[in-house]
Length: 111
Image 1 (cartoon, one colour):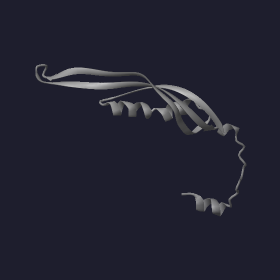
Image 2: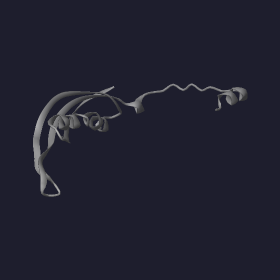
Image 3: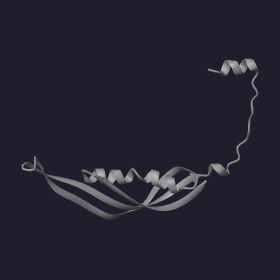
Image 4: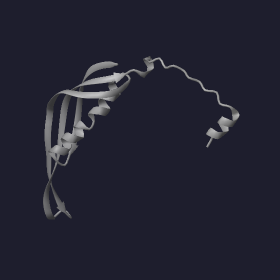
């Protein structure tokens, strides 16, 4: 087992503030797993800081003239410190169990 700490910088975006935050947090497991040595089985956020929070706002019109409406999109960049627990499968010693089947058993196991 291997316990490490990682600092991740992730960006999420969405039509609302909550969706932007959820988009950024959904990337934590994958980003931490890519950098972990071995197979990641636990990711625990330790610290979270907001690096930037931006709201993009624009006016949209139907056919360029009619029915004006204001649209917005939120973008959130987070700095997340996580503690990662990983298992190095290459370092494990597996015991070998070999089975010999008779021709009849082999024929019965075939599908």
